[in-house]
Figure 1: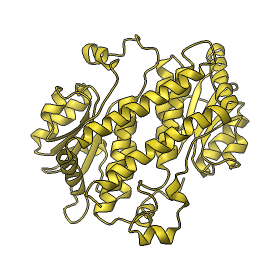
Figure 2: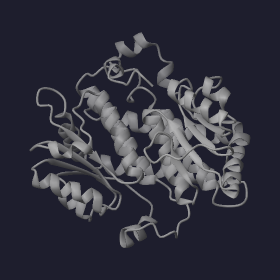
Figure 3: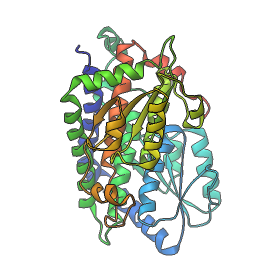
Figure 4: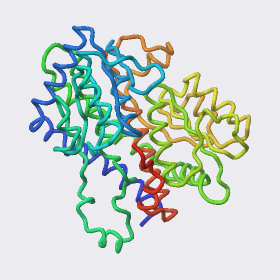
Amino acid sequence: MSSLEAFKDAFMMILSVSEEHVEKMLIEQKRNILAAVSMLREAMVKGNRIHITGMGRSKLAGMIVGELLKLLGYPTSIIGDFLSKPVKKGDIVIAVSASGWTTTTCMVVEEAIRRGAKIIAFTATKGSKLDRLSDISIYVPGKSAAEETSYIIRQLAGRHKTPLTPMGTIPETNTILIGSGLVKMLEGTDGGLERFRETISMIISNARESFQRIIQDYADLENVIETISIGRGRTKKKIFIVGTGIGKAVSLMAAMRFQHLGLNVASVDDWKFRNKDDVLIAISSSGESAFTLLYADEAKRSEMNVIALTANAGSRLAKIADYKLFLSDFSERRDYVRFKVFNGKYSVFVPGFEYAALITLEAIVAQIAENLHVREEEMKLRHANIE
């Protein structure tokens, strides 16, 4: 196996599983998709609020869907956030849980039902508690061919359970994909199933273009992987990850997975404890986000290693960074880069760059696990056990 095979396998498997299920979803879940869109439209007309719930990375995937709804003017609240709003009769709760059995998520949903809310579930598990509690369930693809392989055969082959990071990567990334498609359907007054298909296709195609950009120069990727890996072992250098908006949710999803690897991941709340040779991973499509640049500038002054994930090779972030991975993005971002605000020209923001950044970071985790011989079982021991 070449030094980057795990990265390539993980990246392409996530995309292939997603792509494989899109048409199947439009056939098998057409009624559920249309019903969810109708429910959301009705909530907007009646002035009801949309609430997001879930645990860990599932919650963050739901928050990305919530951010997209906000851009369409939907009043959105995150349950458990310090600014969360009360759940009232007629409100909608979007609940995300791949297993459908997450204790806290199901408890929140039960309470929301008692308060008269309607439930849209994103889950990979038909017949689960969350599935049975919901008014509408959207079944997100969560299986890959590798998961059907005998565990013993996988171990004899010298591979982990999958060439992905463990514990639900595919359902989480597909929640973002399918959620993006659903929100795009809200743009028009018709059913919009073609918008659903086109949006998901756009995001997947952009991720494939990003993959091609990354692997054009293996040295950049190898340097990034080596630099991140210093957060594990005796050195225990701290790793900080920053982004804004949807990029912030992506940064938190990546931080959780890096922690499962045994890397010394630090919250940006602990930025004051940064030291020389620590690592900052900065995520910004434009490479001009003031918030992200603030951290990048301070990291350079502190003699930290700065890694940039950006779509803009000429950006200030790219110039600051020691190592960079250039991803692709849609041309609609040009106005954002120019004016520094979301100017409303594009009614539905499509998170192509953010999705590609998440898949890239997931694949990096898979490669580090391969390089350092970190078993999936070891990663699971670092996963939160009370949810």
